[in-house]
Length: 498
Image (cartoon, rainbow, N blue to C red; front, side, top):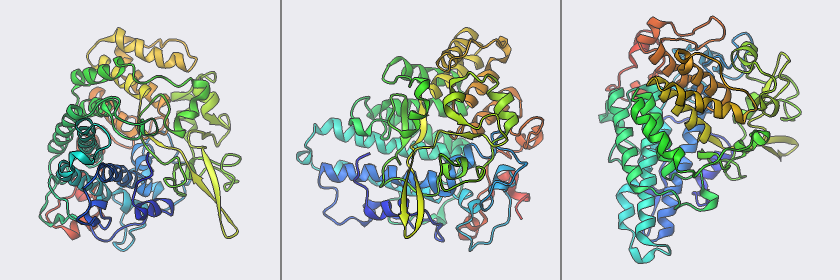
C-alpha cells in the first residue's frame, strides 16, 4: 500500500495500540485537514488510503481478527494457559468477564468494543461526501475512472466494516452521515442484526457498481479493494445470511474471471507475506511502517522462528483437532510447509513467521511483517463448495473440495453427498487455519446443519439451546452502555454480564 498515511496513524500502529476512554478518540485524517484539503488527486488518494490504515487498527486492536475468528474455537486447547490478559476467557467463551472501566488496555474490553470500526466508517463517509469536490483538472490520471474507483473503495470499506461487526455483535449503530472528528453516539441505538447486514449488502452492491478489476497499481493489488474484493465480500455476506444462491453467483463471478491464481503449496507460507497471486483482500502490514510488535505471531510462534520466545507457544494448539479432526494425513503439503513440531505436544503454525527484529536499547524486539489475509482464492472456492452443497449440487461441491485438496497433494474426499456441507467446513478449517475464519464457519455449520463443534472432541462450548439464544454474538462492553444508555446489551448476554 502506498505510504501516504498520516504520521500519527503510522506511529500508533508501529509502537502499539492503546485503548480509548471516549467512544472515539482517533480522528479520521480528513477531519484534521485544512480548507486546502480535497483539492487534488493526491489528497483523494491519501484520504482513501487512510481508511485502510484505520481498518488495520480495528483488526489489530486486542488481536481482534484472530481473537474473534480463531481463538474461541477448537484450534486451541483449554488445557494449558494461553497467557496474556483475558485470552483464556475469550477462548472459553466466558465473554461476560467483569473488567474495571478504567482497564481500557484489557483484551476483553478491547474485544467487546466496536470503536475503531467507526473510525474507518467515518473516514469512508467523509470520502463519499468530499471526493466529488476534487476538481477534475487536478487528476494526473483519467478522472472518471479514478474518482469512481475511489468512491467504490469507500463503499467497500464501509460495507466490510458493517459486515464484520454484524458477524461479531449482530446489531450495531448505523452511521451514514457522520464525518466530524469524533462520532457523537449519544443519539444512536443499536440497529438489528438484519438491518446491519442489509446495510453491508447495500454498500457492497454500490461498491461493485463503481469498482473495476484493474484500477490498482501492482503494489496495491490485494491491499486496496477492486471488483474481486467486493465479490468476495458479497459471497461472504450472502453465506452468512444463508442466501447460498446469491453466494454462488458472486463466488462464480470472481473465480471465473481468472484474475487470481493459486500459490503452489510448496511455497504455502509465501501467501502470508502478502501480495501473492492468491490474495484477494489483505490488511497491509508487511513493511516497517505498517507492522507492530504485539501480533498473532507473538502468540503462535516460538524459537527458532521467534527468537525471543525459547519456551512453548503462548497460545497452544489443540493436538486432537490438529492431528485427528483436520490434518490426519501427514503428507498434506499444508502440514509439511505450514507447521513445525507437528507431532509434539507443542506444534506451531508457520503462517506468521515473516519477522524482522529491531532493538530498543539492549532489548531485541520482533516486528511481525505478515499481512492479514482477509479473503483469498481458496477461501472463495471453498465457500462456493459450501454454497453448492447447501443447494444439493453435490458434484460441483465435491469438485471444488478436491481441487483444493489436490493443491495440497491429497486425494479426493470420500465422504457421502449428505456430508459435503460439513466437509466443506472441514476443508476450510484445514486450508484457512488460523486466518480468522474458523468461528464464523462453525456458526454457519450450526445454522445450516445443527452441528455444534466449537470445542475440541466432545466439547461444544455452545449448546444447541445457547446457540438458538444467540450466544455466538459477542456482548458489548458495559462502558459503552454507561456512555450511551440508549444502547442495549446483546440479548443472550444481558443476564450474564457480571
